[in-house]
Amino acid sequence: MRPQWSAGFQVMGDWAKGEFLAAGQTPGKEYGCAVVGAAGGYVMGGDVFVFPKQKDPNATAAQAKLESLMLTPEVQVAFNAKKGSVPVRMDLDVSSMDECAQKGVAALKDPKRQIPSQTYLISPDENGALNDVITQYLNTPSESADDFVAKFAAAVKSSG
Image (cartoon, rainbow, N blue to C red; front, side, top):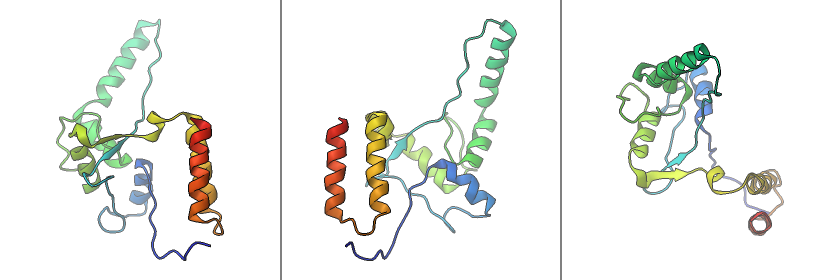
């Protein structure tokens, strides 16, 4: 049986920012943000917009116009301030963004602080197996830490 929890935290991604904003919460007050590791790394992930190849020149022109608009400094800052992510452009003034975004941008500007997401490093099957082991452990108070470690190692070996 594991000991009673005395503290906790939850790792969230940028998708949580909208909920915090809707609740009138502010980073540094009601919630915090942290970067990973002693050097303050930034876990790299990403959302993408995909523009399928078009035969119609008007559709291609519309895609180019949307791309151009999405990458303007004003749209990048405004969009990411609401979403909680950081701009894809590193040449922008982000001083109007909150402290979490500013920490993220600072980390991204240093290649040594860029940490790839596990989804870049392992297969979807292995990621799913590890998530299953973690979920089971968090939802099974009687499971010991040693049992968790053994199951985690087995999931890595069987998926790799």
